[in-house]
Length: 222
Ligand SMILES: [Fe+2]
Image (cartoon, rainbow, N blue to C red; front, side, top):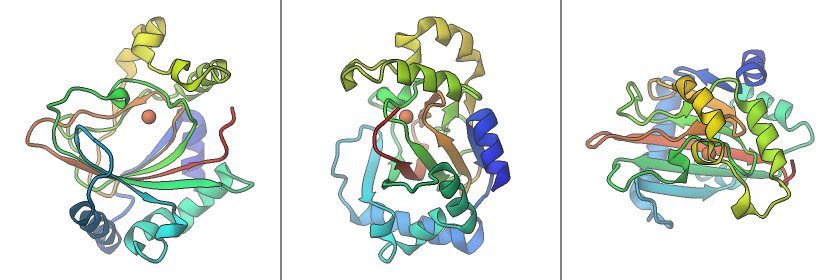
């Protein structure tokens, strides 16, 4: 737990390579695969299939493989540390990316999220090279991201700047060489807050990536 918190403070993210293994990983994969097969994607998603399946509590009894993977004793403690007075928003997402034929969406560019969110992010498939669409981050950019986000907080959502290359070109030229892909086998856990500069990796043709994420936040406030 302390390792995760220390990394979050220092670097803005933590990587737990093979955090889930064996039966626990299989349960998470089977649960997500079943939902990906059975559920129709409600939203248009250019890169494959994306599902939003509701809150952590709503999934406690119906998707136990997923619920268990986000509520290990260690992850419960980290959540308690980040949200000492409780966390009133949780939402689970599953995505299966298998095409890059449509170019990049907004999250395919280096950015921080306009709405601060704390995320638990599991790779369900091996992400062993840049062809598999790794999540990419700029280590230690979370304090600068926080400053930039708060600076625009008073503006209407659509006017809040968050894309580094187009909105902050001078910063982009400084940090682009620090963009770091996070590689790891299925079961790898990434914990980060979205003030960290990050971007969704690009999945090459004939490759795929599956991910399951838990998003957490309090009411929208700087
Ligand atoms: Fe993002």
